[in-house]
Length: 313
Image (cartoon, rainbow, N blue to C red):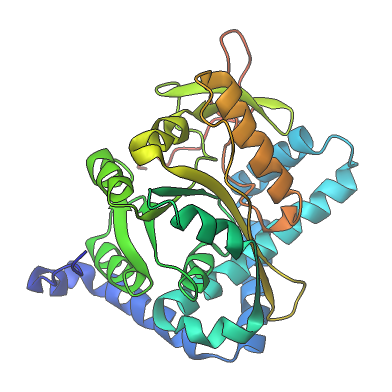
């Protein structure tokens, strides 16, 4: 796809704070990794202390998904989740303003042969992943071995939308707004590799309830429908940072067989189970602050507190 076209309207005074923020992000990307890691960890721990609603949502999710852990262990995991999310902010700036080649000797790929086998079919490929703290960097690192389209949620701020889309297109083939199903289908019909993350709660429409970490979760049926477009292969991906080092691991699973089965609940349950297995490899690098279980089956009580609303005084 062609890069987004710059508009001089983005230079209006109301956008100056956004351009200042972009400049700050660029400066952050120029720092040595050791400093980035420490600053990111500090940013995450500060958020843990200050952003009480996200902290509470995270602890609720961890209590639901890891009942075998005691409260102290879950709090430690929650704090580590925020710390990794803070580091992920710096990793995202490195993806936008750095170059993937920097990571070639710092990443271990497993399962590339499964992707090559799927490519040899000459059909579309649907890569299913989850929302990890290093989501943007994972996509940039993928470009070292293959070009991928990504499905994303557009930014409301037009400056951020312009800059992020432009930078992402340096390592993505197409960037597809998540509501643009026509373009998504076109990508699969063009035998592209499409990166799709089905692990969030999008409400009841186009969803079924399927277990995720043992909890019924509203799970979209979109992957099963997309797999039927161009007889596309469905593989899963997982990537994570190894410890505190600047080393990363990237895993691609074999293509799912007998998928889709035609049973929406069974297919959604299968995807959730596969994602869960991968997330458990590095659970502290998953985005537990998302309200994954917001939509409940009929008759079940809400699991999260009502979001606080600011009122004009």
